Length: 66
Image (cartoon, helix red, strand yellow):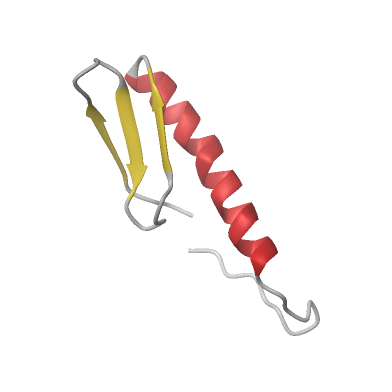
C-alpha cells in the first residue's frame, strides 16, 4: 500500500507528519527522518485499530493489494 504523507515543520521546530487518506493519523519527530519512521508505525496502528472495529466473516473477506 502506498500513502501520501505530508511532513511540515511546526513553530517549535518539530516535524509533523500527517496521512491525508487516514483521518486522525498524525505523528511527529525531531527530524524529518524520525517523523517518517514514526508515521509508518502510526499507520500500522491506525489500520490495526480500524480493522478491529469491523466485524466480518473471514470466509467472505478477500485481501486486495493496491
